[in-house]
Length: 203
Image 1 (spheres, helix red, strand yellow):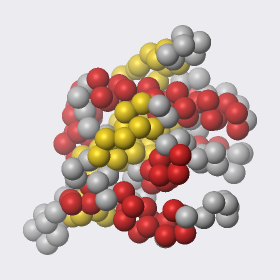
Image 2: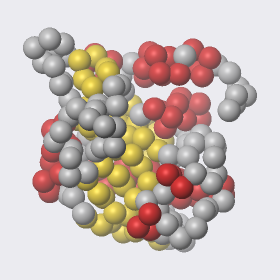
Image 3: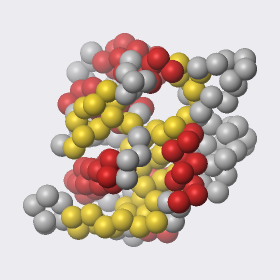
Image 4: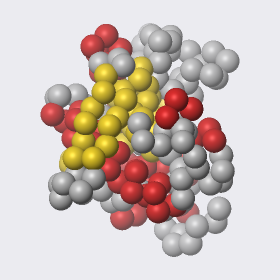
């Protein structure tokens, strides 16, 4: 829904963007995010609908209203201690687009349970021009004794170690991106097989 205000960070919201601006925002935002994390030597990979977009054409799906990435619990801990409330300047390759981004880590990031559901997103990479953002969630072995090798986020997504690692190298929106090892199985589990073969969006 184009009018859903939950897709914006209220601190930077200046009005609902149209689809063209959203597409441009997401293109530059994910490029800035992936490049910044690569430059800092931090491992992050694309997930959920963003991973599905990679599967189809290595780009953000035209109807997607948010972007999703994941990090390990150790990377999230580093972000919380050393990168929270930091700001980043981005210039496009052709020098025509300049953006600023705010990395905001949830103060409850160390709490790995679902709780009341209000803190399931661990961090966000926010475009300061319009408030659109990337959701960043941490994965960790929350039950190492009962379920060793099983990684989960606060929103009940669970992954076996062998499905995530070793991460594959790919390309997304024209820059290097890391992809979960068993990306096909992960996508089928989350969206069913039809999402990988149907060429028309069912809404």
